[in-house]
Image (cartoon, rainbow over all chains, first blue to last red; front, side, top):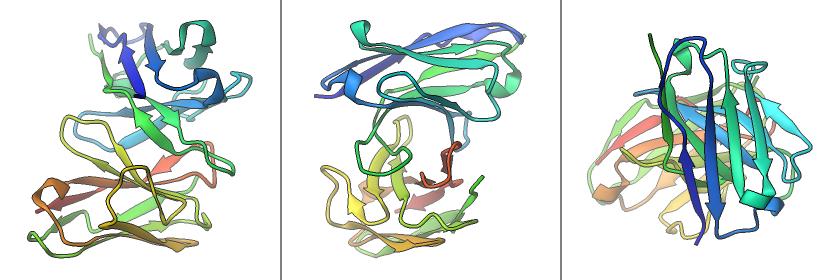
Length: 122
Length: 107
């Protein structure tokens, strides 16, 4: 059974930093691209960042570029998102998501974590 | 950036009826479009990918169609458990991956 367990969210002050983690099981982590998707309270879905299966390629939404860093540790079956220079508008539930393996360019997401809440407030 | 517009914002139907949800892309995304279902307190669930392919375990009541800029998710024989917000998502023009704003389906 595929499982993604995300954690690390908490209340943080504007300008602060945080690292989110997503521990996966039930599939070969090194074979799958991964992403983070966030959802502000009561709002829709916003893709944040993606990383290739090897970790060699990373991608970011303009809204987080230069502030967030995605990475992965295959030895720990763990995906990370380092958040820095946090703003109130970064407040959201952050989901890690596994990329569906289909031909072609780009990502769909076939498995999701339950989400971890990041609140940016003074 | 490809903007996805979902119509309608809210749809209210009765059990047994058919739901038709639309997603329009601001530019051609070919067939690189997916649909997700999200219930309160849960993460999204992939229903359809590449416009018309059902994801693993998705009932045949859910079907997708379209290409280019206009796409449709159809749910036949609605059940109360189909109440949810439905999102479309494109993967043709990225980054960024983009989602529509969602359609709330009330049964």
